[in-house]
Length: 340
Image (cartoon, rainbow, N blue to C red; front, side, top):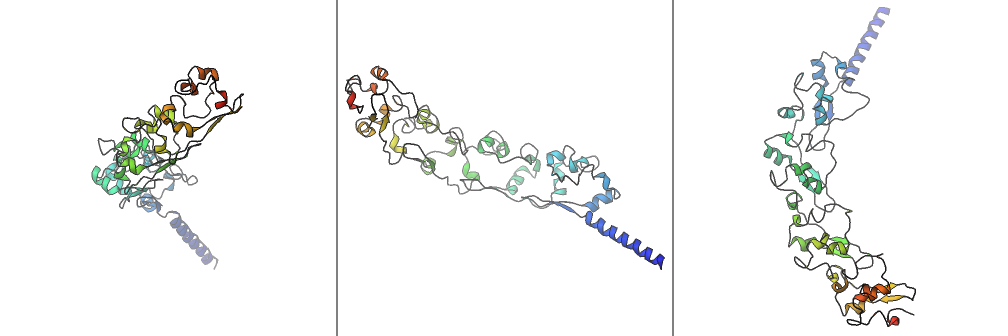
């Protein structure tokens, strides 16, 4: 009786061992967003190495860390690459062997872009173009496996898509927006300007006359939060002033109402020791154009150093016109400007 009980206990232990063994050595799936999973078979590898778990654990795979490795890291003998180096087993660096682990058909990759239509990367199109050479892109340089989203400006310098889309191997990423952004219709851009009406930049009007690459990215970077340029900067050819120079298009110097909708500049008040002096834009714009004063006489910038009456008498600031020829002189008639 005792012998029979002992035998049952041994059989139960063996059965538990088999169940535990089966549970611990199931296949492992490594999932990807845009491709079928890679399946690692414990059975195949245990049969290969006589059920010796220690060959991989924890020498190659630390069960406590659960770290993911890129293909570039595997090619440097990390993870699967410790054995799959072309000596013990086929190499992870061998392009012809990619499909031995990556089975199935790669899916399209969708990139959501704020303010623009989605970009769909077609694996089918690119695989056909490269003759099935996955490593044309997945080589640790073009697609590294850990790279974050890159800007269009970075692509123009050869990053990710720009490695091939440089105008030589394939159409350039600079300006051919509609080739990737399907159904693209860029939105209007609104600039809020302190002390004056807002400016609305119409992509529709400009893309009717120019191509995207005429402005992006040399004049305007594809980046939110880029530095805003002053009107004085534009007068020197920056930003809108690259085209709005009086030759290619109306000048940014003085044609205020063309961009600032419902433009009506207010009265400017200067606090002085001799009482407040008020400058009426309404009176002056009835006699002169904005370009007569801005920006040669008055820069479009707040916080500039005030001009003294002595400097005005020498032709600076208001004294450029108030010289007793074009208008009454600043040397007399104080009460015309100063509320005394």
